[in-house]
Image (cartoon, rainbow, N blue to C red; front, side, top):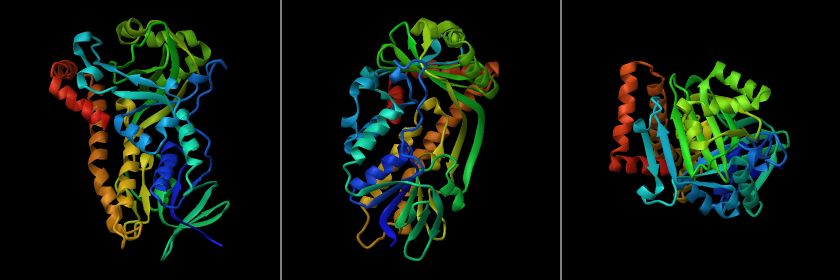
Length: 408
């Protein structure tokens, strides 16, 4: 006998898990299907004692915190293992104090600008809360096919067939579901790679997130972690990224010195000596925007959320936050639907698509153009952008507007 659901969520990452939990808490009968539901994005630590240095980290905005609080997930997080960001310092590629931007939670009259936390902590908290959701069923299986039929959508898996009114694809940047239904994307490779690692520092970070735009287009970010630790995200050319990853294996001390010597030594000045805590990882960077968030066009039964819908450069730290806002808006649209509409009603689904369009395009556009601006090595452009950062830093109203946008 076929297992019938209101909604089927595909994808086992943070976005998939959060989507399934959020919609189940709205009273919908949800089936969450993924090949694996184990926490992802983990990175082996160099020493077993460094258990807090073995996961990719994310910057969580106020809007994401609000969503996690509503889902009862925030209260399940170990608060001593997450780090509040009270200040943010962004340096132009002149690497000078006068061409930098400084954002302060105190000046913005907010408790913090963001929270930095390992992905596995968020996933573990979501897993814990999900165990108590009576409307949520999880299945570890491979999706074999998805068929749109007259009265339902059929998802064929290695464990059986499941039917639902609507399928939500949270299956990542290379979404098989998106490709299966021919939802076109606008995609552009940055020809850059993000090198990520966690490090200890000899000086306290003072709850400050640092970001340097380096000559040639590199972006080096060091985000605060609990204790005297930071998380590295270095966006650099592919060849240089390979050199850095190999260097971290062959000579971790030299790898750390490469970081501290960056930006004319400002990294060392701010954080002191660095020590590598875990295995360095890397992933290619690109910009991606699905041309539609629902599909197929003639009879939409599929909804895209998270990386399946959009991917951006990490310099703004907004990728996960944008995905969480997809979830919040989709939950709102479906929960507030008119009684006479089905969950797959095209009118309903287009409300979600329209609601998300402005936010997605704005964040992707700003992030993309900012990255392209710092790739330009023309002396005049370089002088103007560093002057611009100085001018913005001296404009308190504009700074508060930028903070409000980043908070979501």
